Length: 128
Image 1: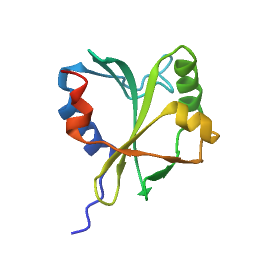
Image 2: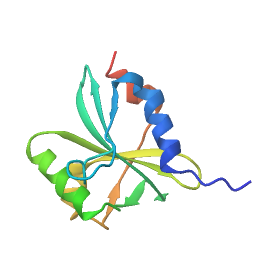
Image 3: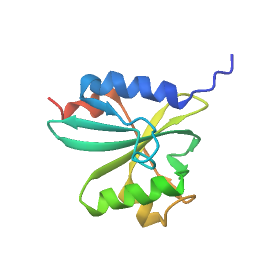
Image 4: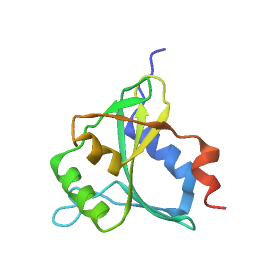
């Protein structure tokens, strides 16, 4: 069976990691265009999370964000926010992450950036 993992699968993982600490930002006209998919409020701090499905090769991912997402994430980082992008590999379901500052340093959208494997124990340890 050749299963293709999607952003919906990634949402389930995020929900499993942080449960009720996740506040989903739903697309809506007028106010949420470009906002990351979720806000995670935890003892270690608040984090804005953008979710993507893509291909990770050797710990690297080609950034694929809409211009509005790039703009909003830049503004959030400029204000001191912790903005992270989580990517589920469409082929094997592995979950990876990078912070938006790494995307900026690499030159922005469509650039290849390093990503780090997201493990349940690491995602929740700073919340205890």
